[in-house]
Length: 127
Picture (cartoon, rainbow, N blue to C red):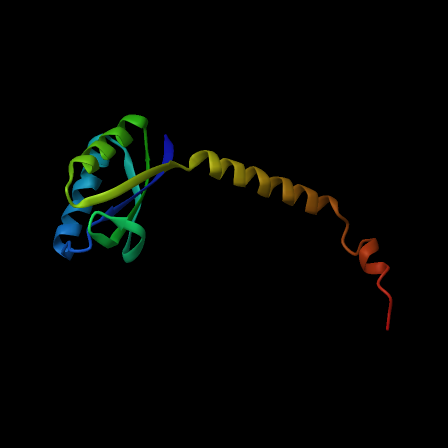
């Protein structure tokens, strides 16, 4: 399964109950396909970079989930038809995580090859 981050922006006039209903509905979409939601971050109301329609602010929600392309297609399809959702975006992050782990492993390997108390410490002049 691949890892994704999916963020969407909801209109600022949405109530807490409506937002919670939307989040539960979208969690149901993912769980209904047999995939898992790792976490949901309700980031709150923030100013938008530019106006969308008549709104200068929006409520940001970030989903971290594991799934397949079909899960993401269904998630985005549902967001597309909701009037309360201004924008959404999806990023596949599993490749980035693999890349970061590879860089960390290379750094640890390089660090372990260095001897403690190498020439840089011995050449320091005493004042």
